[in-house]
Amino acid sequence: MFAINPVYLQKNNDMEATNTHFNQAQLKLLDMLSYVKTPQALQDLENVISDYFAQKAQDEMEKMWQEGTLNDEKIEGFRHLHERTPYNKPVL
Image (cartoon, rainbow, N blue to C red; front, side):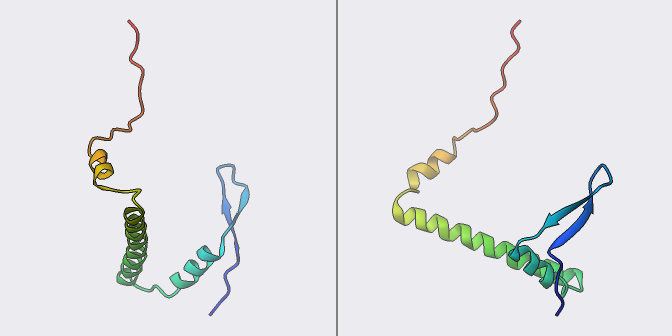
């Protein structure tokens, strides 16, 4: 196994080097990605990560349901929710 340098140099628009610092989770994922050798392996890893976060969201919704902060009434309210940016109509 190899160590990953926690600082990655990249060029910004002004062609100056900038430092990007990775946290421990990002470093671990970068290390794991070194084992991905095929497009299928990359797709499999993407699916595992996606499934993980979907399960976390499902667990949180279940917790909210058990606590009563999420219920049928609130879910029904989502069907009629319109949170668009209000635009002012031009005054003629």
